[in-house]
Length: 330
Image 1 (tube, helix red, strand yellow):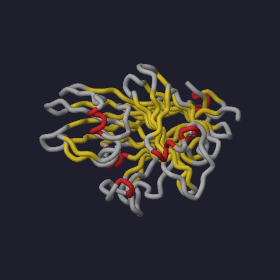
Image 2: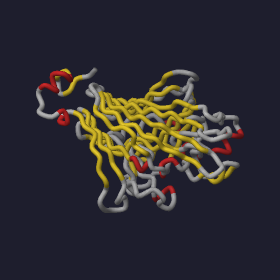
Image 3: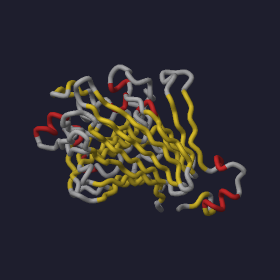
Image 4: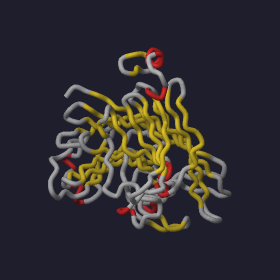
């Protein structure tokens, strides 16, 4: 168990009037603006201040460490689910979940039409637990993606923030509640922004090899590991990181100041990882994206390459990742 403000957690508790001064989970509803009526949960746990978005599948919004914002948030924010078009509704945040049946470009197959990066972030969660325990703040929720006589997937999500550790633990169980086999696709779109991401920020990847998605990425392939100086216009670049099989790995993003993030996951469950960057004056963003399939080109490409894994009726997958704040000497 970590410390809070230089004291053991037990000592810290003895020195406050209310335990909520040290750790709390607070619920609210937006009262105006494009996201009016949407729910928010705020976790406060020592140095971390974490925004959760129940009406975006309990994804993570802005996260602050000692007041410093870590996530990139797009100019759209998080409008109510159903906003027209991916570009008008992708709010960013520390984690946007893509899936549960598709990620990458829009596609059509036997499961129906799949919008860009799937439907998940437009689904509302049923929050079933929000609690401060002896050593953590925990929120649990259930999200269902289903169609009539089609796929029926249930995701059971746990977000746990241990006290004093500077860590967020995200765990998902995906259960096939339908009567036939389905092939889920899930990608965790971790979006990091300024001041963590700026010229000179370094990405340390566990990859054996890094490949460019297209010509725009090919132009930046030699410098994929170091974030460039932002400019007025900068093309979106996406790189594919080929990972070692069946290992616990970590990708690190380190700013010139020494503040950083480590994203840890199991390649037996998430064998793919992609990097998204835009070094534009109005869009400084670095995405690190672990995924269940090692292609960012969509469901059809994943099927053609044999990358889709079947999930039998009643069976489940366990997925997830850990996000740790790390502080290193420059």
